[in-house]
Image (cartoon, rainbow, N blue to C red; front, side, top):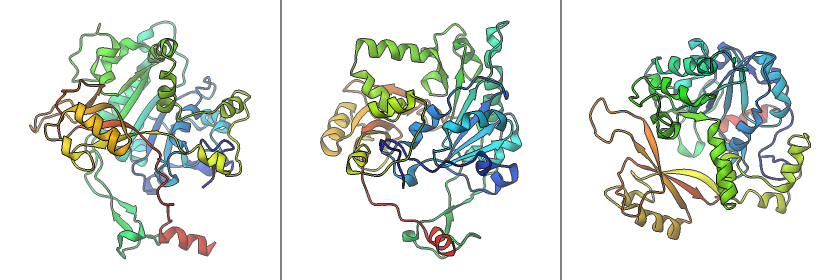
Length: 384
């Protein structure tokens, strides 16, 4: 594992864009699962939006290397080539030269198996009609939601400690992977909007009034819509509460140091460096996590427990700071219940918990055990 000169982010030697480009067939043959798909609308001459700012928090050094999610960018390779200088030193990035509106491209990158699909646009909006500024992003979102996927199970590389002798063509053990979303409406997705009022077009089953504030709409509460105006409220929050900046920095940037901010401000980009006790110490910082209440260390609070008791127990016993809940919109067990969740930040002490709830927490860095490559990886190293 290699880190940048400040020890804040995972780093790798510069790779050419051509080495990271996948065609549709290569993408389809790659076992992509639990990854992040970035659907990017851009013309070759569109203004740069800074994709590095999206990828860097996903490459924070307080994640272990094997925890990093593969990022697959679907869009115009001519535009991405202009952004590549700032991405070439970040590991686990692939590019599919295609269209986010192409269902064939979306299937090739296994969008139904991704942990998150991010829909962005770098195109300059027309001044004629602000409603049309988000038309492509909204169309891409609705297109994915209208898709259906095969309910088959793929394969994943298996850690040798789990046993099993079945080998894939690459020589590594295989196991069954988790089922993906059968319906596109269940694909985890977030869409960036330029115009707040366009949020009304994202959800076909949303009964919100078109004049409803963005903060009160279902897509915003469920985390499926993001608007630039959200940053305005964050700026005012940090002005009146300077301690909020530390939390916001952890949530949005993955952490930063004065040295790193100076390097990025000067335009040098991430540079590799030697791993010293001082730089490795920068890995020891909190990270955001989601803890299930169905089982695990906090499972005892899932059956009718109170949020206040959960908060105290998590802090005292595990050093985790609870910041909110992630709850199913429909808590009934009916067959037509929605799989959507919404966020409840800082509930009251007597708030009753459900076993299907998930808890957002700030958790301490876990140095853990160093990741051991599986037998397939070791075989490839021996052959080389």
